[in-house]
Length: 57
Image (cartoon, rainbow, N blue to C red; front, top):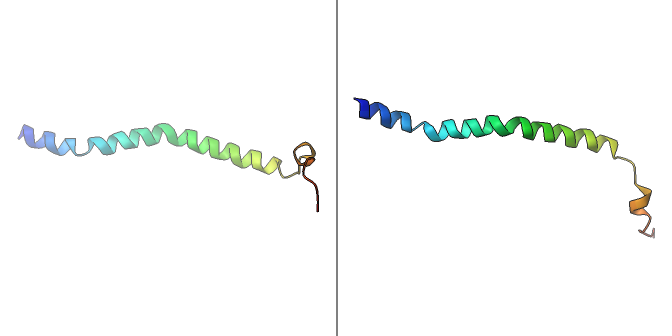
């Protein structure tokens, strides 16, 4: 009976590992996504330094 319990609990080990990794990296990914959205809102202006070398037609 102990062997049967061990084999059934071993089935969930990869899923538990993936859940732990997701819990570890989810806040990082969410934080980076929020940072990208906030910084993208501020950069709507055209930068004259970057676009000064492009000639208009």
